[in-house]
Image (tube, rainbow, N blue to C red):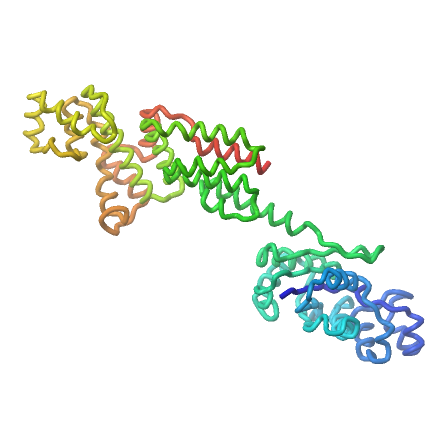
Length: 451
């Protein structure tokens, strides 16, 4: 289904005054015309409508005609034509209701069965203000016959005639609701030719860019990758970042191979950066930024889950460092750690006094904290345990209790820590990380594709 929407103006019905005078007489003709050429849209249009059968062969629609003939020439079947008429209350001289009624009768005569369904939509309210017309069209497009446009393959918009507020409000709402289906047409009155404008494409592209920029600010890369009107390279980098946030570094690197040759610098930079995650310590630093993003997004449950994953990793590394345990891997550090305890009778007695099982293949946080306590290095890590209950009782673990920044800070204050921002700063210093790589990625994306 293809549809054509036509906004009508005071020049959309034309005729020679002398011809009308011969058909209707001088007295009536004087009531129709403003001057030798211009017809009074409302009063003159009404008289022409009432005398349609006498003068229909004398009437033309030279501004609308090129649009219809362009579409028919392009083999575009027009299933529905909607004529936009003004019929204000109180009436205005420029109201186009009767022009639309005349056009509704003329089109089938001129184009036979090629325009099977022609309907008129009246605007009865004040048409001067853009905000009023914007709201009007926002509501109107959900009603008959506009509800049919949802199934249309193409919606051609001829907005050459009429009031600017009507045309602008209609165009913006059509683009917002129907997107790429909308084809804005332009008629050159001198050459009597019609051509499609690039406005829809440009407007939607800019709109997608604005959406993308807002999503970038919130690190919502998955949503950016779904924006169809963005450049492919932007969406590919967004896919990369989305995979990276999920620690899927293989697919992140694979996505980058799809970038166009013009983006080779970005590709090489990100591939080099991603290759560093083969080293465990770099994964830990990446987890910090990952966690920070969840905090900035106000996804506090996910933030806490990452917070404790980072906490446990740093706690383990602190213990390994303090006890000079080296040469072990991510998967066998527990055995080396047990051996150190077995070789230190005082440490062994200390742990047994606390009734802690150090021979477990999965050492508990409590055990690791005890090992820090033995070295008098436990204060900061011990304080952070205040958030354990909040995590455990959340939907991310074992219950349904809420999580918020307020509740997080409330727990921290009871442990004599100012707030979570203070904790994040300490962790940043502890990890020796400086600039958020995702902020740099966003900056590079903006410079390369948006500005």
